[in-house]
Length: 138
Figure 1 (cartoon, helix red, strand yellow):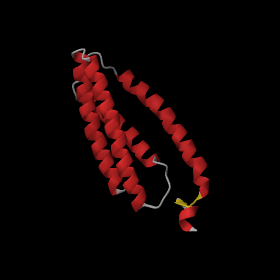
Figure 2 (tube, helix red, strand yellow):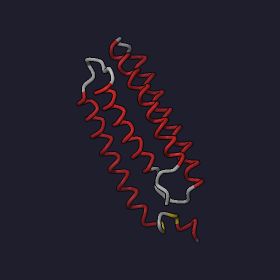
Figure 3 (cartoon, helix red, strand yellow):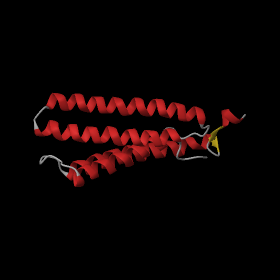
């Protein structure tokens, strides 16, 4: 079973680009009190990531027969988002109203949902043989 696929690597690169653009837009909107623009930027960021993961995950699932419920994409987005966010905070130019505790709060909540996703994956994995769905084998 190949864990790092071409689609997952491409998703990680796009996720880093999306997140960096979002962090830049976030700092700009906070600095200029552009709350409507901030909401629009957040929605565009969310939709972009969702559809990128949807299409790349779908093509990844067609090329690779193993069963992971999108867990690899979820873990990758968690790791890339945290790396880019901490990088932006410590190396970039965050606004004075941006705090590292905001990043940590998001990571704690997101980590909780990631843990739930891992538990669901472990429960449903019982229906596979070496990561391949039983229906695909028999």
